[in-house]
Amino acid sequence: MRIGVIAIQGDVSEHVESLERALAERGATAEIVNIKHKGIVPTCDGLVFPGGESTTLGRLILREGIDAEIKDAKEQGIPIMGTCAGLILTAKAGDSQVEKTHQHLLGLMDIKVNRNAFGRQFQSFEVGLEISFLDSPYNAVFIRAPAITEAGEGVKVLASIDGKIVAAEQDNVLAFAFHPELTDDMRVHQYFLDKLFN
Image (cartoon, rainbow, N blue to C red; front, side, top):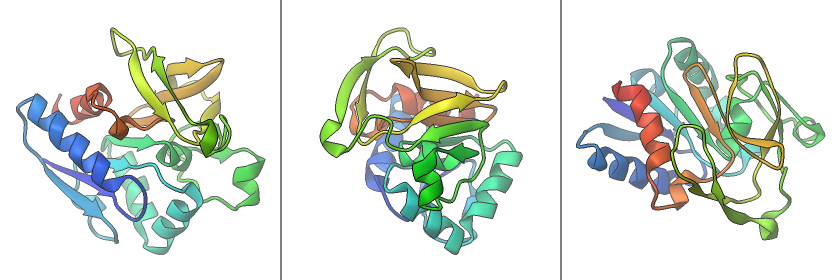
């Protein structure tokens, strides 16, 4: 089992640590690799897109030729999880800010995103979030978070705040507007691992 973390920019080490903890919790093992260039994605059984600066991430995965490999992985049913900026990259369409910055989107999910749905960094917050696959609230950390403004028929909404969709799933792709790697609660990472091990 091999899990790849897109390691061009963003919360890479935090995701690696969270994956290691989640694997240990379930008594499972997997190799976790950082993906910085073309050729690694096809060797992975699961992929994680960390938070970061979405415009930069999009530009770099395109430049490195990783974008086509990620799209192929999606078509092959490889589980993919995107968090914060990673959620933005999974989208098919974005708001005017996404369009203005010529944000590269992968179109892995039938969703439209608002890039800074909750405001700037100083408006970041934590909240006890009700997520459909969990039986108790999850302490979700939002930092300059996006939100999903439109979701197609095949998209399963997992969580919302004030009418804004902040977690969703479509086929083998998971998208979260918050940062599960910045909490000690491993349940979101466990849900992702369920897709690999079940």
